[in-house]
Structures are given as C-alpha cells and as structure tokens.
Image (cartoon, rainbow over the protein chains, first blue to last red):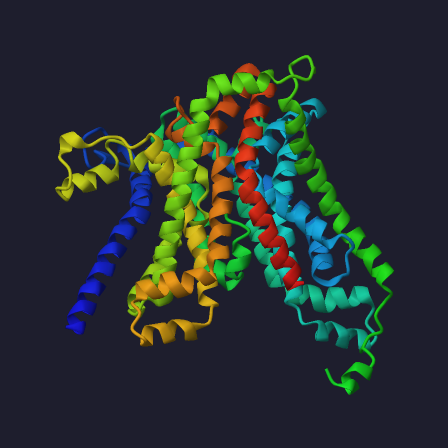
Length: 271
Length: 294
C-alpha cells in the first residue's frame, strides 16, 4: 500500500515537473523558432520557412546589431571598471574596519535595492539633460554604475569577510606593510568573489533597459534598446535574434554561478 | 575565555580606533558619493518635483491630475503586482519545499537543474519571450490544441494583464526559490526528522516546521520582487501598453509625450508609497543581518 502510494506520488511529481519544464522551456523554444523563421503565419504550428536571412539583416550594416553589441559591451566594461574601483575599497572597509555610523552606511548601500528605481531614472535623465550628459555613453555608464556598485559593494564585502584574518596577521607579523599585506594576501584570496561581482555588474549593465531608455535615448543604442525597437516595430525575427544574443550570457552565467557565490549573496542581484 | 587568553597580547598591536575609522570613512566615501549624487539626489528631486508645477510654484495639482487620469492604472498596477507576488511566493514555497523534503533524489536533482533557468534572464527578454509564447499563434496555444485541451477556435492571446503576470512570475519565482531553498537547506534537519518519525506528512512538516523558520527570507524575497516589479517598464510596455496599464508606462508617456515631469513625479511618488512598507521591512531585516554578520 505504501509502495503504491509512493509510486503514485512519484508519478504526480514527475507530471508536475513536466508541466514546469514546458512552462520554462516553452517560451525559449518559441523564441528559437522565431529567430530562425523566414515566414510564420497564423494558424500554422511551425514557421513555413526556416533560414538565416534575418540573421544576415540583423548583422548587416543597417541592422545595427554589431554597433549595438559593441556599445553595450563597451558600456558594460566601463561600468565594471568604475563600480569595482569604488566598491573594492568600500567592501574592504565594511568587512574589516571600524566605521562610524556603520548602520547608516549599510542603509545607504541597501536603500537602492528597496526602492523602485523608476523615479531615480526619470529625474537623473532630466539632470543629465541639463548637464549635457543625456544621450552620452558617460551618462549611461554613470547610471549603470550607480546601480551596479551597490551589488559590487555587497559581494566584495562578503568576499573580504571570508578571508581568514589569521593569514593577514601572519603576514603582518613577518613584517609586511599593510599595503603589501592587502596586495599579496587579502586581494588574491578575495579574487574569486571580486571576479564574480565583476561578472554580475557586467551582466546587469548588458541587460539594463529602463535607465538606458530614459538617459541614453536617442543617441546611445544598446542591444536591449535595439531589441525593444524591433519588437515594438513588429519585427519578431529581429527582436528574437537580438533577444537570443542577450540570452547567451544570462544562461551561461546561471549555469556556472554557484561555483562563485552563495545564495544569500545571489539574493542581492539578478534584478 | 580563560584568563591566560585574556592576558595574551594580540598578535598585531591594534592601531588606534580613530585612525582606523578615518581610513574606513575614506575608503567608503567614493561609493557613498556616487550613491548620493546618482541615487539620493534624483530621489529627492522626485519628491520636490511632484509638488511643483511647470513654472516652479508649489502646488498639489499634479496629484489631482494623477488621481483623475490614472486611478484605474494605479489599481491595475497594485492588483498585478500583488497577484504576481502571491504567485511567486506560492511557487517558491512549493519548489523549495520539494527540494528540501523530496525523497526521490533524481526528481530533486531534476527540479534543482530545471527551476533556475530564468534566473538571470532580463525582464526585457522575458517580455519578448512571452510576446511569442502567449500570442494567439504562440507555442502555448499550439501545445494546448495538440493535447486536445482546448479547441482551435478557443485559442486566444494572453497578452493582457495575464501576460504581465506570467512574465513577472516566470522571471521572479526562480529568484525567490533560490533564496528560500538556500535558507531551508541551512535549518536544523533534526526537527524535520523528528516530526516525520512521529508520523507528520511532508506537507505538514513543510508548513509547521520548515516554513516558520524561513519566514523572514520568504518575506524578503517577495518584498524585493514586489519592489522590482513596481518599476519594470519593459514588460507592461511590450505586453500590454494600452489602458488600463501599469503606472511605469504612464510615467514614460507623461515624459516622452508631454515633458510633464510634475505628473510623472506624482506617479513616481505613488509607487514609492506603495513600496514604502515593504522597503521598511526589508531594510530592517537586512541591516540586522549585515550588522550581525560583521
């Protein structure tokens, strides 16, 4: 009787898993079909022609995908550089040093997570417009970095906190200066966590839409904006191809992320 | 601590606290400055802007106009985000619960591999995915027809409020599940084993023993999702841009079409007010946790 019940239970769970698999992969398969469809009319289940014609169009001079990809990657690299430059010292201080108003400082690094960011983007776009930063790469990088550095600070702080202080003390006892100790002991030991935060900030910047939409328009064309324009213009093939390009790094990172980070750090990100 | 340990001098003489504090402040300052300039200042401008007209005079007209034009959209937004949050919480509890209490290792491993695919897929790509999947001629309808679950004639597009909810849940549920499964994995298994030995079903063990211990994590995950969904522009814009729609779309419309920052900021303030309760809860929880870890 119990064996029968558990067999039924397994079957039930397997069915639920099947439905879940369809819910998760169905949209992805549908996008894949659109990306390679030459023609697809209602009510056909499948596209009537498959091919690469739209890929050629997306990557042609006029399609703008190469340009947008280049812009997106360049913005993301600059965002990573700026975010880490300020996040590494801040993360170290939060993990290791006595800080006055520590609670307030923690609050400042948490608040951007807890507040809807659309008011921020709307008003920063206005300020940037007056400063001549609207529609510039600099403006977009500043917006992305102000968002990314919050994540970077938390991940960096966790990475530094995980370094065993005994190793640092040993180095200091043997006569290493504080700077040498940080450079030769702390930094290399925290490197995997810092690397993870760099990848995170990179991805966040690559995928960011709302901030770029308000601040970057019309001169900064990133991949998400290109995708948005194609989709709103009703061109599903081009939108699907650009979406596929954006999917590759997201899914790749999902598959490897747990080697880098624990889930409570992950909680800060992925938005 | 023994007396001997107390008496032993620290390996490295500690530098005086004041210097340490000054160094800390110096190291934190650049990051804080960026947050002040590019987060706090714009947020403040949103507050002020909501109470000003185009000439810069203080007024409540923006709120009156927002109320008049966008009450429906505001309620629509609250409804969608609340419903999505509840669904996300329920799905996260179900998946994380099975990952923690499931007895078939292969199914647990399969589920663990499966649920996290949407984790880092951005909202804008999710919106595009759903535009294809939930459309009248999308894969969902084709599969439902092929499985004889609906008649071909009954196929309809789900690209309205339902599409927004599906997109939000699809993207955010894995995130809350990941959080919750992490918290559940770190609780003491002994209570669960004891309850199971005494004959409690797994469902009962989940709701009476596991869930009460990870309540805080679940709430934090749901609150973060709630706040995030409130300010997503791409999903409503791409799935359901026509009235009634979400207030993010209205905000973009007031700015792009009318350069009307007053009403846009009044609407921003409304979404801030919606998020305030959740944000307060999240911040209290997170600060306590971070202080505890330090």
